[in-house]
Image 1 (cartoon, one colour):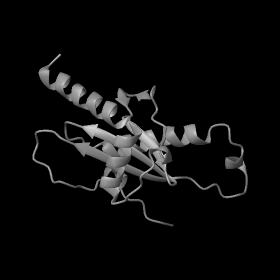
Image 2 (cartoon, one colour; image 1 turned 90 degrees about the vertical axis):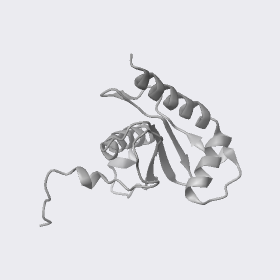
Image 3 (spheres, one colour; image 1 turned 180 degrees about the horizontal axis):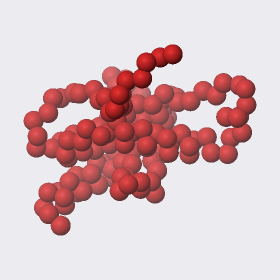
Image 4 (cartoon, one colour; image 1 turned 30 degrees about the horizontal axis):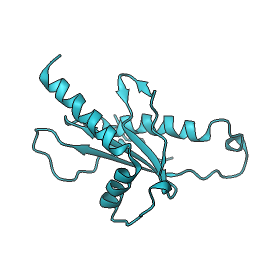
Length: 145
């Protein structure tokens, strides 16, 4: 195993360990969102511990005020993070609505708003903030009918 891979996995595990603590996670959430929540019990952790799909693992996910947050740590640049986020959110929504019959009814079911944030601390020179969208990964544009 290369030193780079060991270092990358160590950083990721450290990120998960640190922010699995609700107080630390709330501090990070407030810093990222410009909010000032002060009760760590407002956070409902829902990280999918056993979610391994195509070799991927979900780092931290949680609900707070009807926002489904997904935080991922990366030591390497990965342009596929929007797609990975899509897969993670599909699994998270499935977990949240598992067993609910109302998703088959004619009544509108409200879902938490997704927010996906990737924290990058690798060696490549990257901007402080970057917006990546799932739509960037489309093969072709389909015109509306």
